[in-house]
Image (cartoon, rainbow, N blue to C red):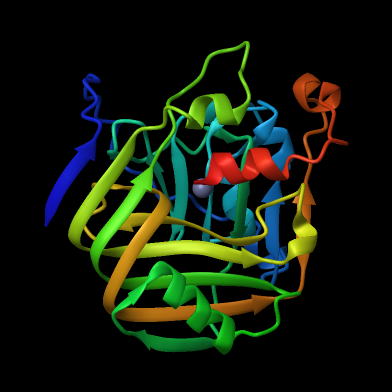
Length: 264
Ligand SMILES: [Zn+2]
């Protein structure tokens, strides 16, 4: 595996404490066939980077998903019940279960369909998934375990208040180009009507098989692997009840163009 970090960030390397597996205390009582989401994408775009839900709480709603952590400190990925935080240095950390998230979406992943991957660009793969799961008005959870000739990702640097809008930060986002790499994609294809709440269409994060690199996916080319899909028809929102930032923000604006700039 050859890894090029773009740009090379001269950040001090801090290795977090040993990883933790977060227990799911009341998982049995939670609806398992649902996507559960913390806050809204438009609040994140507007700079509401501190949430109230801990990762330990979020884990009660799913074992698979994506998001970010408080202070916008990197990209979050939940895989097989374990949280991974890909920070702006391109490395993967294991966040503390008491860490909170301002935006995330999770589910208990129980794939109903699976297919082998062939050599496809991201665009070709999306078109293929659209053929396998043609109902664009339901929620689709996706996990792809595979081998990639290229995988381009990004992360975001941790912020301090007063927070700037997300596009001001992603304009200078660190990007990472991984080549000939094995790993897992986790994400969702969501309907157009989630506009303002989440990201319509495909949004996915990546982690290498050795759990050392990853990030929010910008582009990739897959060679082989396994594509697993789960269609879901329940959508739960956990909104911040005591957040001054969330309460004060104007969520009446159309932020479609901001989202397009922030996601790419
Ligand atoms: Zn993302």
